[in-house]
Image (cartoon, rainbow, N blue to C red; front, side, top):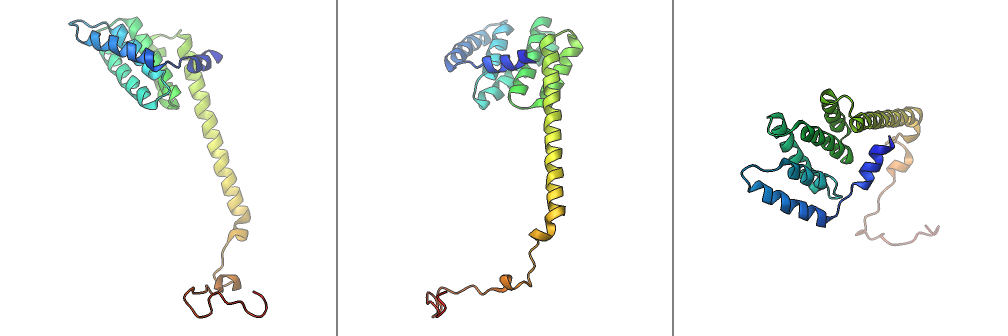
Length: 181
């Protein structure tokens, strides 16, 4: 699974690249028949940014492109690339279930897609690992509570709980008694 981890780490893009791709994308939108490859590139670059807001915008663009692909407006290869990068972006955002679902959809169309196979397996193992970690944490909390609940119980009738709280405005406030307390 090192392929996906390497791609996630190495796919960070600069703001200059994103600005250039946005300019190309905006110019393409003005055309009567836009090139959807530029939309894909721009969406991928936003998903590769370190800014989560840009990642979300990239997801929006890629989902728009996915819908256009499903309406037969673009080629099958572009659709496959779009699905893969959607899954990858969800993974980068920590949305492992969404990544798994999109990778599954991609594998239904392209069963031999190596990146999708790896991404689905990595998403699945991350979800499983987090579920196990959460279950272990809850079990440990339950054990501690039930094993030590008497030690942590607070009983209102204990002498310490009935100690008087001194009023700072009273005449005895700030005085020291004979025992030095």
